[in-house]
Length: 149
Image 1 (cartoon, rainbow, N blue to C red):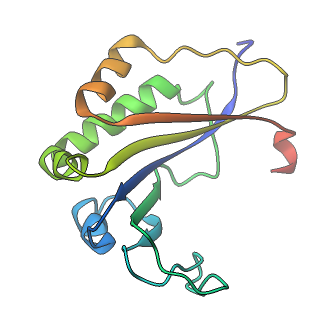
Image 2: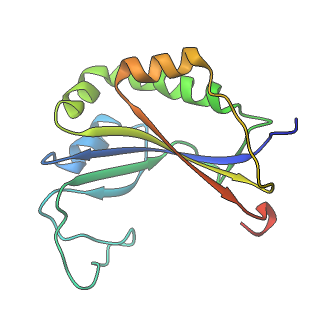
C-alpha cells in the first residue's frame, strides 16, 4: 500500500483530583507509563523529581496500548486497532464516564512515515464508537527514518 506507516498509540487520562493509582487499578490490563496524582511531586518515569521541584496541577495517567515499540499499518490497521481498544474499554464504561464528568480521556496516536505526505482514513464506524464513548483522538504526524528509531 502506498500509505502504510508505523504508529504508536496511548491512552491518556487527565482529571482534576483523582488518585492516578485508582486509574491503574481500574484499567489493570494497561501498564501506565505516567501515573501522577494532583498535588503530588511531578516525577520522571524513573521516579526522580523534575527540577525545579513542582507539584502536579492535575492528575495525569498515560499508558501505551501495545507492547511493541511501533505498530505497522500494513499488519495492524489503525481503525481495527482503535476499535479493539474501544471494545476493551467498554468493560470499564462506568469508570470512564465518571472520569469524563470532570476530566478528559484521549487516544494519542503518533504516525511515523518517510514521505512528506500521508493520508489515512479512520473508518466512520470506529469514529462513531469512539465519539459515543466520549473519548477524543489526538494525532501527531512525524516524517522520519524508521530504521533509526
